[in-house]
Length: 429
Ligand code: EPU
Image (cartoon, rainbow, N blue to C red; front, side, top):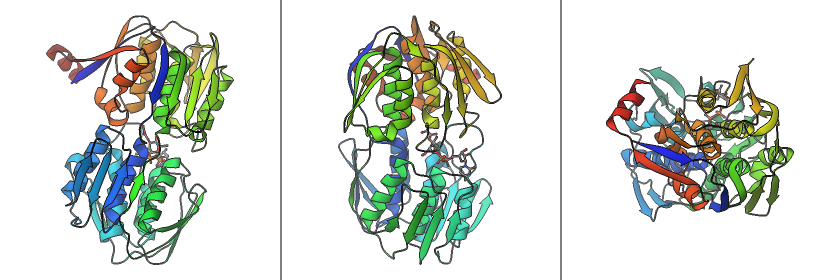
């Protein structure tokens, strides 16, 4: 177990390269189950979630070989509908994509209820509604979801809540179903388009991705293919926020700026200079940042995954900002930690009210989830003194080599092993 130490006050300057999208990767890997021959995924991020999903593909009989760190060759030919009620499947939320993929391929699956970040209730009722509409019988037996279908038949499915996970999971289950499936009120995130691109390359017939109505004509077989993942818009957004709060001139490489329009608009409102080209962003803050309110919404609205990092930035802005997360109202665990660093944040009626600018002070803080971790690292870059962040397992789930990338940008950041006393303290909190 380690902690990250960040000596604040060193301005970020230079280039950072963005990795493949975590939230695509975690769906693309299970999607490979649906193919009958080799699937090659290129540009995967080096994060622990990817490693766990690759292990799960092997647990069900697949052969997974790495060609370097980022390209994986998956042979699904020998996969079986092996039950995965416990173990690694519980470590991450995205293991729920094994439900849709295994149901689509084998007409049955048993998957333990997924883990992931604790952001308040994270139901999967819309996934289940979709599977049932396609003809599956779904039961919850001792914390594992059992899915069984004689056959899967296309259906019209209206999502009561716009959900990334449910949209992808229903696509996975429907691509080999008989007839036509229509997903109404579908989510439109770029990661969904990426998964649909992989499935289409495998031979699936999918129309309308990126709109709120997706139409799938079932096919009987899917072939292997080669696919390159999209860049991680949330990682890019995190570095853009860090640059706005603690940077001089930062260039972010390997990014699709259109995927970040809502964030870039907010940064411009704050008076940050933002320039964009095809695959690059240039971020340069002015001396004084203006406060702005944010409200998270489904894509293309402001992403919930950037709400916590953005809250750290707002502590440096002049005025009062209201932060409202309409997707995960309980995604607030970073707030107490930021307060320990001298941030002025009140919570009122489900929103956080951030007053700034304040000089953040270094403290010992704990990342309770992935994006809270990013928020605390950004706060550390802006703080006076050396901030210690624990809970790095969360950060490592979703950010590739964050310490190295920040070092390259000129930050003074390093990792140290926890002492046994610190381990005990952490365990007790
Ligand atoms: N919801 C339901 N029922 C469902 C599914 C979702 O009520 O069956 C609700 C959720 O509780 C939430 C909203 O609908 O309030 C949206 O949830 P969604 O299903 O879109 O989230 P998800 O698929 O579980 C993905 C990302 C999250 C990201 C959200 C929102 C993955 C593996 N996770 O989660 O990413 O916050 O979409 O964009 O793709 C992260 O990367 O840090 C992260 C948590």
